[in-house]
Image (cartoon, rainbow, N blue to C red):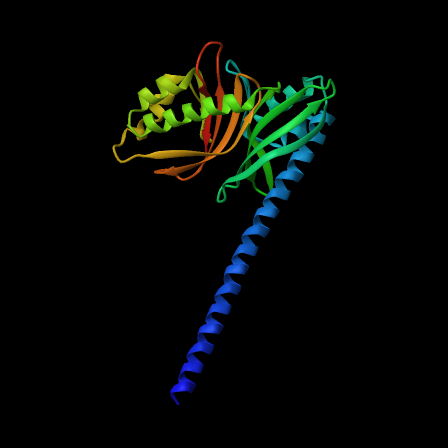
Length: 269
């Protein structure tokens, strides 16, 4: 009788473990399938965007941008709104001949926000790197923010090391809970902060926006997922925050001649 009870217990454990493995495999499979669907959705949106931009149709281009979208050209040149951005592309002379995704990650599942780095070329053989923030709008993905820089070949190893040190200082100053010092040391004077609201521009305005960091309990770590050197003076970074805030982030690092790397564009979901 005792041997029979042991056999029954072992059988129950075997069934439980088997069911658990099936559930775990199912969850893993479901997550993978969801990610593939999201990736395919962005890929389709990117290809469609390329076609409609080259066709130069105002209504079609406007449909691929959020109503309050931003296109940063430079610190003092920002195109705002889907219609204005569409007009910019219509008036732009060079066609985009090809594009490919360098990096893509989901930033916020609930709001349907994704971060993408794109490499594209124009008909005059110029190469660009573009950071795009996508957002779900009803049944389609639309661009909410974008910034492009013409690519030049650079010695990436040295520059990435320098950026890593500056990122470390960002984390150190952030965790000292003094937003003003953080922004003063790490942000360009004309830095741009985007958090799916009107742009915050300049160190004074960004310091005010970051007042929540002054809470003694606030702490944050930045872990880069992708750092793309675009020129000797510009790098795009997409990463993961950990600590008091657990979302993704986008940083565009910029280095003026003779200066250290500083944050030019800062964004999170």
